[in-house]
Length: 241
View 1 (tube, rainbow, N blue to C red):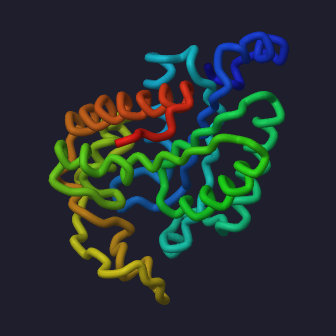
View 2: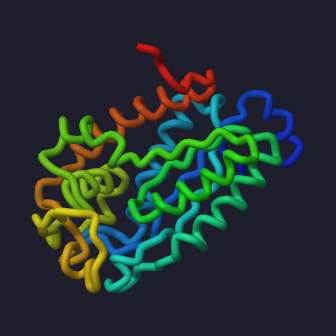
């Protein structure tokens, strides 16, 4: 149920169907020479479209938050960077208002690694209101599943490029796809980190990407995300072994 498609009265009437809301969160950021700046917006958007088709009456879908924390890639043209503390406060305010409107369970469907700190900070504050909050980082939480389809992962790498080829192959310039096989040894921050680690604004091997791989990623991961949504709906938060 796309929140913004409902009139106010109709939203209130349909609130009994679900108290779960998804907020897709992305970034406007350089992704190599071959992918669009909106790559991290488009993947969560498509997941939401597929979720809507399969279990539309079970979950509300809020408008996406398009801007994110993109300090590392801000050295490349077109990247819009919002500091983590600013993003966290904004996201918290949005989540708080959703909570006050009767949506008690919130899922951040995140498309961008730089957002994780901000989403964690916002989640800590939202939980204190009584809200149930979960962040899904699709490329990170489902690494094992993705690597059954692709040989590797990376920023604008094989997995992300495949995803956007499936989303809309007209947005991808595969003739400009490259590879950057540098992998950081540690989670260390240093000057010019973005230029050094993300040479050409990417990592991994984008030349291996295909639309077919992207389709498999979205189909497999959508089912995984739906399972999580249904667990949250039934308040299944743990298992006993």
